[in-house]
Picture (cartoon, rainbow, N blue to C red):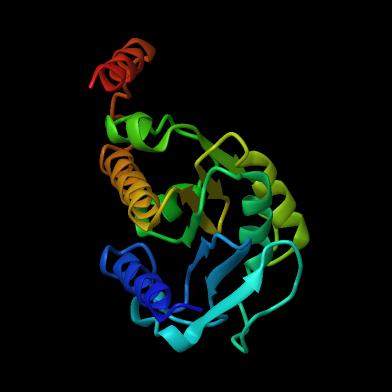
Amino acid sequence: MNPDGLDLFAQWARESGNLGLVSCSSGNLSHRLDNGSMLISGTGTWLPYLCNDQIAHMSIDSDESYNTVKPSGEFRLHREIYRKRKDIDTILHFQSPSATAVACMDLVPDYNVIIEVPVYIGRIGHINYISPGSEELADKASEVMMEANLLQLANHGQVVCGTGFRDTIQKAVFFELACSILLKSNFNAKPLSLENIKQLNQYLKEK
């Protein structure tokens, strides 16, 4: 494994902590490599302080490991999403405060209160509570994320995917911002209209 790849992985893991997306051992990060394997943070590791020797390297197609680091207990979740989403290479499972507060509520709000949600994130999925680390969670989450880039896990947290570390973490930050606005407005913040969103999409095409 190229040490530079490990350095970059650890750098972005720590950045997720700096941005308030994860705390202590909450959350996990993974990245698909060109050879069909993935890097994933080790079980029990703290992303805000992740070191190179805490990064597991394993196959996406099997349980085969390429180093001695035990992967996060959510490795099945990451693996199944990669199997279904060939277009993405990075996944972050996070628990930012505002987004997780909304995930613990019995409602599904319109998150399109800022332009960054439709522009950078797109569709957001939701699933009911399923035991962490289970095959059931991996199967259901990967199924929903075939058409969504971000997923709210009831009473658990969020999963976001993207192309590269920056793109993936940026989506998480914008989602946390949207949820904080919803909470601060007592869910009275006015979302963008469908026409507004269409205009944004046209604007992006013309850029």
